[in-house]
Image 1 (tube, rainbow, N blue to C red):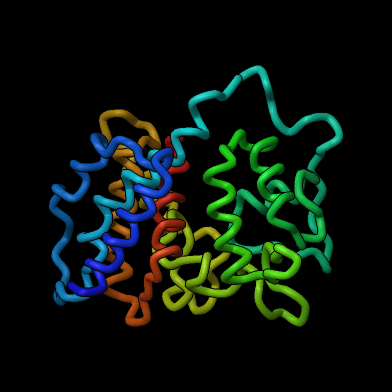
Image 2 (image 1 turned 180 degrees about the vertical axis):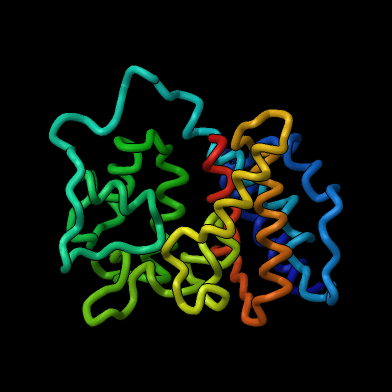
Length: 252
């Protein structure tokens, strides 16, 4: 309970300091009311107490991605063609950053600076600077080099550091990747189990879309599975925000 209170207090402070982060929770407030499958031991289920507060903040941030999209302004642009990464190029658990590097919006070697990430996500994804700055700063602080304001998209030199580090930026309860523990160390590749589950959720829904409601159901099922089968499930506040944000990216 103390841990939940600390997280919620921190988020409330962030929302006050950054009013642009505050968004409507109307669509998400119904998600915790669903009846999930019972779990034998309910004590580890701290996530249910924080999802309501976090998802509203994340949805408000991600709204900036979709509001000003021009369908005619297609990506990738000429000169930013796909090129597969080479053996020495760093790639990690974030498909969005990997995509930007594969198309040359970010350095193809995977060693990026905070400024490059802000510019590339704006140009490639139409992402607002507020969201990309927050995510980028935490990546530098948790997994990068503060002096150069840089980090590696995957592992750094010698296989150390970078976004490959577990539970700093990369997090459990992913949209379609197994937890580090449940996947026997493979938290990078798409899980056929989770992908099929997500497709089945959408197929059986009224909307037949990967909308916020259906992605909320996917989060709920993945969360319950992790709490039941991952004894090392650990949610530091920032990885928790990244995890929830990944689910909201789909409908946005």
